[in-house]
Length: 135
Image (cartoon, rainbow, N blue to C red; front, side, top):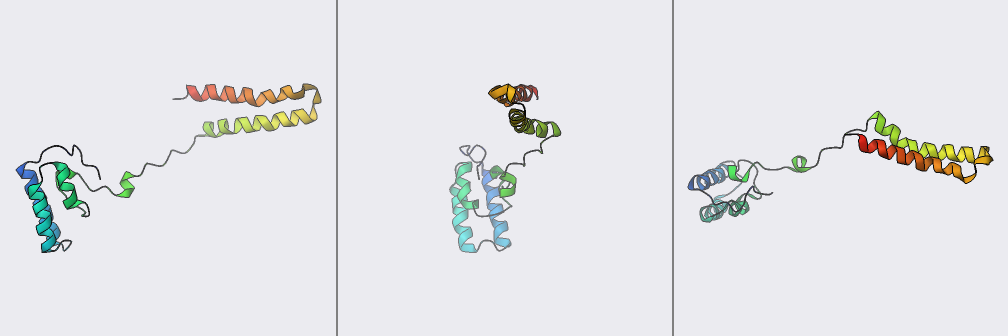
């Protein structure tokens, strides 16, 4: 977890808030008294926000406000990409359709020769121009 501005120095009130959070973890049974003693010594000796991280690295909320809320993997993961629109689906099918059409024309109408295979290239270029114009 990243702390916002880890090099900022702590105030006495922020250290007191961190000690209160540790005391809450003792009350709920997450920490025993020996662990509380070790972690409270770390908090008391902490000079910066980053120094508080080891005392709270494996603990859920409550946390001192200077550390921010606990980030779960679900909150960190990126959102799902939006579903493609109908226009995007059609444009993604245009080049393969043009290639199939060029092959059909090549085998049925022999007079165009290999120049018919320019059709998919032209369609790809046109679709690229339209794709750049979309916001």
